[in-house]
Each structure stands twice: as structure tokens, then as C-alpha cells.
Amino acid sequence: MTSGVWSQLVGQEPAVEVLSAAAAAAAKIVDGETAAAGAMTHAWLFTGPPGSGRSVSARTFAAALQCIAGVGCGECPGCRTALSGTHADVRLVVPEGLSISVAEMRALVQAAARRPTTGRWQVVIIEDADRLTEGAANALLKAVEEPPERTVFLLCAPSDHPEDVSVTIRSRCRLVNLRTPTAAAIARVLAERDGVPPDRAEWAASVCGGHVGRARRLATDENARERRESVLRIPLGLRTPSDVFTCADGLIKVAEADATEESKVRDESEKSELRTAMGGDATGRGVAGAKRAAEAAVKALEKKQKSRATRTQRNTLDLALIDLAGFYRDVLVTLSRSGASLTHPDRANDITAAARQWSPESTLRRLEAVLECRDAIEWNVKPRIAIEAMVTTLRQG
Image: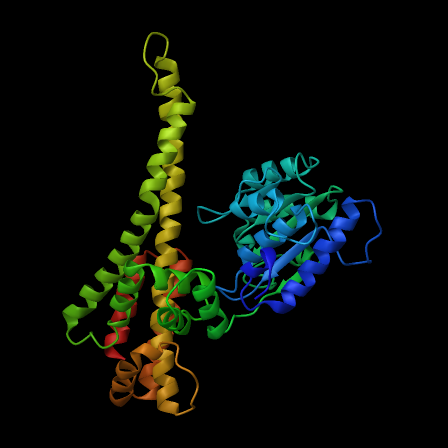
């Protein structure tokens, strides 16, 4: 396996080669030496399918840039703090709502213009850069066009298509295209790095669709395994009209439970810290104004948390829909006798049973219904309406 911080990147050897060379060149620039022309640049765009590790690659590269040795050793304070998210000169933008606002981006660009305080570079990581509003993209473009001397922008997006990243921003970035890691590479990492039993690691790697983070969750979280099972029971569980509403309700509840589980502890902690910081929990004379200000700030925080919960719920629904789409794709593979690998090899019996019952045409209609539901939710159709319409088609074929 790759050593140092680069061990975080699973099955991405070509990207590691490019990024490690850039980190070495960056170290020479900081030390006042001459680096190879074009080896290091001020803006990078990481693209790749879900689960390929776009944000992990950006964080890893940020760690290598802050590495005291300049090679991404993984042991020095620069590497450790950058990977853990506590480095003062590594700024991470993770959209907690549905988009990244222009106000947020302007504040970030202003902060990024400063020289590094403790590190070697000022690094800005923008996860899901495809969620930049038009105003936010324009604010970022100005910074990328005239970057500060020791600032590096790392953008993550599904692709470099204009729908994901504007052409003007793309033209000023160096592209790092990540690939879907193999099941063998994922299983090896789960076993060697995360201590997952080999048999479970192999199973999780075979059903995760090349998504390293999901493989880890499936291997270590019983609730994640149960949620997946409940979703994959739907295709053959639609026997009566009432099953449509039961299954749709189940999908919504799974998403809501996942969002609640992920948000509950974090939300309460954020509220408590905010009240304490603003003196909202103080007692005695003269604190009424502080309490009012604290409560106003808490209301603003609650609005932000609600937006984040909505995003989490939609992400969970989308993951469930991807699993469903994979099931119908597997049925088509079985019907065509192409010999291609199954997305859900552990559901081979159910897939074979479905292939006996459905025609290729009806299977394709079901698959299209799942994909249309994903699009509808992305366009802000109420999830319950979109899900019920989809499940109706799944039953009828």
C-alpha cells in the first residue's frame, strides 16, 4: 500500500503520482528553490464518480502541502492537523444546505488572501463545488484569476462539465480525474487500515458500488446494513396496491431516521456552544440583552441546521434510489445474459426471481422511474410525492 498521507487514497495510483510530484514542487517553492515548470499550480479540480474520494484526495493533498518534509509523511504536525481538520491554514467549505452562498464565498476568499500563519500554504478546500450559486462562483473566479502568492484552491465536483463547474473556473484549474476503486482495493484497505474482518470487508467492497466511505459504513454499522436490506426488499415486495404506500412511507422514514441520527448530537452541541459563547446561559442582572441576542443567534442556527437536515435526508434518499437502480440494472444484466458483474451479488436469488417475472421492457421502465425520481427530488419536488409516484410505477411495471 502507498505510504504516508497517500495511503488515504484507495486505488488512485495515477492521481497520487501527480499530487505527490506537485507537493514536492510546492515544498521547493516554499524553500526558495526552483521547481519544475507546471508541477505546482494555484487551483486544482478533483472530479470523479461518487465514492471515488474527491474530498479525501483534496484533504490528503492539503496535508502534503503542509508537510514539514514536503512529501506527505503523515507523521508531522502539518500532516496530522490537516487530515484531522484542525490546521489553521486549511479552510474547508462543506455545504450544509442546498448551496454555497455568495456571502460565504466572499468571506472565504477574503480570508484566503492572507499569508499562512503557521503552515506553508494557505489552502482552501471547497467540497461539492457544483453547489456554488452563480454569485458564489463569480466571487471564487476573481480569486482564482488573481491568486495570492501562497494560496491554493482545491475544488471537488462530480465532473468538469459546465453544469457542475463553470467553464471559466475550470479553465484556471488543473484537473485530477479520479476513478472508481476496485472491490479488491477497497477490501484490502478495510481489512488492513480499519481492522474489518476479511470476509465482511470483501462483502462490503462487493456491494458498495466502488464507494469507499459506504463500504466502511456497511462493514462497521449494523443500522446501515439494515437500511440497505429494507430498500432491496422493495422490488419483490410490491404485491398489493397498499404495498405502494407502505414501501414509500418506509423509504421516507429511513431517510428521516438517518438525518435525525446524524444531526441530533451535533445540533444540540452547536446550540449549547453558541449560547455559552454569547452569554445566553448567564445569570444575574444585566444579562437580559445577552439572552435575547443569544436566542436570536440560536434561531438563525436552527434554520441552518434545518437546511442541513434536509440535505442529509435527500442524500440518504438518493443513496437508497441508487441501490434500487442497481437492483433493476442487475435484472437487466441477468435477462441479457451478458455475464457482467452484479451490483448486488448478495441478492442474486432475488434478482433471478425478478428476471423470471419481468420482461426487459418492464424492467427498463422500472429503472427509468427510479432515475426520474432522483431527478425530481433534485429539482425540489416533495420527496414523498416523488417516491409514491416512483413506487407506483415499480409495482405496475
